[in-house]
Image (cartoon, rainbow, N blue to C red; front, side):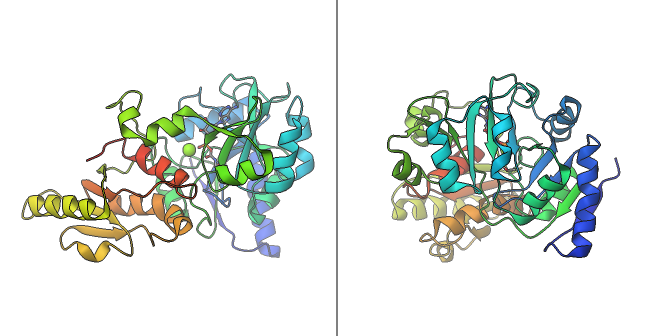
Length: 348
Ligand code: TXA
Ligand code: MG
């Protein structure tokens, strides 16, 4: 497939013309990649089952995995859902547009192809001027998973999108690097109390501050304590770099010691080793490819960088990556959730 690629940084007149061309592809039932504030999304008309099938084909994604439906304005949510719970209204008023996906009961106009057969739908109003203009121009809600091939790290830069999807989608909007770098917080509003299914930039504390009690899915909480991972050794392929990623646990001193030992072990051997460190710790290591995730004191910076750093190791041909563990708190939950998944819960 020849992919129509347009570059848009700001919404000037020439860009609007380009945007109209790719919005037209959505109306024709085709797939278009677009930037959001979290990661790039692989979009298609959420009301068109044939178009939705093309998303799953392009990604190589199992079709029982539900998609998020993106809207371009607050007023667009109502027709998509059976009802809007009071607490969902509060979250919309507080956090939309923004990196928060609300799971609600779906209206009949949403085809089950978009929801993986579920009776619920995830809706998100992204906080990105190009995404908003694009959805408005397309004139329909846009179903969009992250724009990576299934199993790969989500794309935060235009070049990641081209790597994964050039030739597999009808259109791509290339823009600046995405601001947040991790996918939206997903919260199920169909249960009481609401449950966070996927942590993201909107933190559990922020949600509790406006809603009171908010639960966090056991899938999230149990998997950050390695002893409690439900099926250890289970082969996850989420967010994964091509090299084998291992998390190094312990006190800062223990982590430094373990990694130094591993690097010494591989010295002079043909295996290409990498270390995912921080600004504060990268100077400790003398062998292999040492890459900083950002400053230990800046979880937002580390979150923004995670997926692109994993792809950098791939570009360098790194076969084994040792990642320093990150202390768990409200601000690092989403980052740790993605990092551990990317490692398939492999720890030393
Ligand atoms: O930031 C984001 O959310 C990005 C951008 C493109 O908006 N999109 C994204 O989509 O990350 P995706 O498909 O990679 O992840 C969607 C997540 C999955 O974990 C899926 O299981 C969950 O949302 N989800 C979607 N609809 C759901 C539903 N009805 N019930 C439960 N979980 C749902
Ligand atoms: Mg994804």
